[in-house]
Length: 104
Image (cartoon, rainbow, N blue to C red; front, side):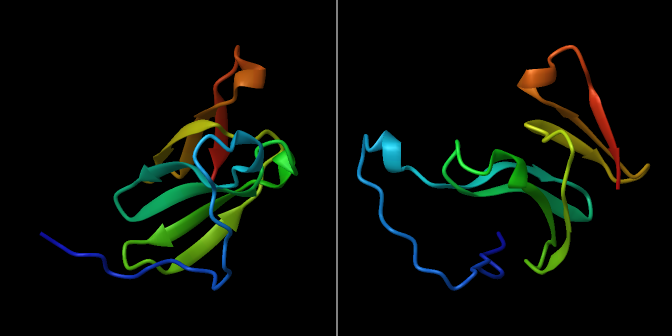
């Protein structure tokens, strides 16, 4: 069994959150997808209601090294990545009648 290869850390100190302190909860990563070559995470890094459209999709290799960041016109909530064909397929609850597709 492999151990933790590398910790992804931006060097910042984050405040602790008390249990049931919902007003002060800070989210850092919203969703993650493990592909064949890379893993993909939606980075929030702030409160859920603040800067909602500043979310990015961060891509890392399996050694923990950052590869690229993507920004979106419509933020994906849940997504899968088709690395072979170079697409992200996603949903967003605000656009419930649509399947979103992004070219990598």
